[in-house]
Amino acid sequence: MKLNALNKMTEHFGNSETMPVLFVGHGSPMNAIEDNEFSKSWADTGKAITRPNAILCISAHWETKGTCVTAMDKPQTIHDFGGFPKQLFDVQYPAPGDVELANETKAGISKTPVGLNYDWGLDHGCWSVVSRMYPNADIPVIQLSLDYSKPAQWHFELAKELAFLRKKGVLIIGSGNIVHNLGLLNWKDNKTFDWAIEANDKVKQLINIRDYQRLAEYDSLGKSLQLAVPTPEHYLPLLYTLALKDDKEQLSYFNDKMVMGSISMTSLKIG
Image (tube, rainbow, N blue to C red):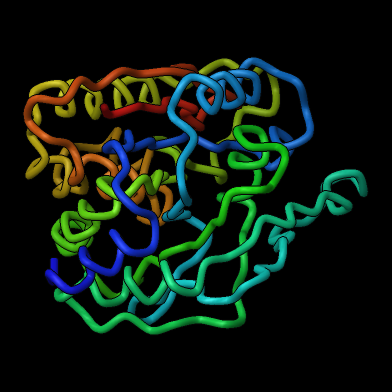
């Protein structure tokens, strides 16, 4: 992390306590409007932690060639899904952006060039969760994209460079799902597949012993992980969260359940 980026953050937000980091299994977009155990847990989490100065979200639903950060004053609410009720498409989450934070995030990353994006906004991986945590939409939110051309270990190393944001009151949220296989959803009885349970448990075991190298090499962890992570975009936000954990920090799980047979809502809080 570049020193001038940290100095600018101090000027922007002043001195703040170090914020926790979250990985949130976001699941169905309907969690944004349903009062269920998952959305209630997101709301409770928002109330339990210190109010952030701003939020940086790494969502499974923004993949780009290269790395980008949103840099507009008023990010749009993106309804990047289909087949859901009109009520969900009517949701707007008018949280402000933060152009200065976007520039400081760009300046703080040395691993790769970071482009400033003026077209994206907040996708449902971001707003479905953040809207339940902070329903007043009065906290600035920016998103960092996932470079689809890079391997998992590269993302893990990049994420480490975001640590300075935590010290300036920025809540970093990785939003995805550990197990996410829409092609094998169990529409019949919602019973969780054995391979999905195995994969979720295996990932948690490796998290608990801090074996992040093996987690980055998830495609070598056997058939259950290959089924759980058929494409990497929902898994990578987990690595962004884990990369920011200090050795002395506590890690706790919440929403540790499976839905529709092949989706894990397992979420975690660091700090």
